[in-house]
Image (cartoon, rainbow, N blue to C red):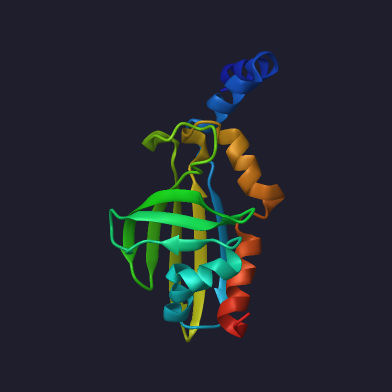
Length: 176
């Protein structure tokens, strides 16, 4: 253990990019945020899949999908007066009102558009007594191109999905 730790410290000084690989190969880089919403899961689910609702909290983007496993999921919006595709992916799993897993990549980035560079996002909804616990995960950044940079940008100093979750909560609870 001491020898490996010493080697890691030495390598981290000599090759910082190798340190990332050494540390994160066995430790996933995943963002996870949870919020409690005072509404039934069905109402929260509608906010997550209804394009007119997603536009209100997801930077003006609407979802485009038929919401079936294996189907494409697109996030479209406007930028400088032109319609633009901001994010694209595929639905991996869907259990309406309970769970959604999909892949994501920014088609406008310099990252190669190939499966190994896509991140996975999950939505997990758990309802109890008319309240919904909503958990979002996004990752694993340790397995994708430019993972460390992408993780830092998305992690956003510990905020991750929190600002979006707060907006979803307000939308569902207050109609804002």
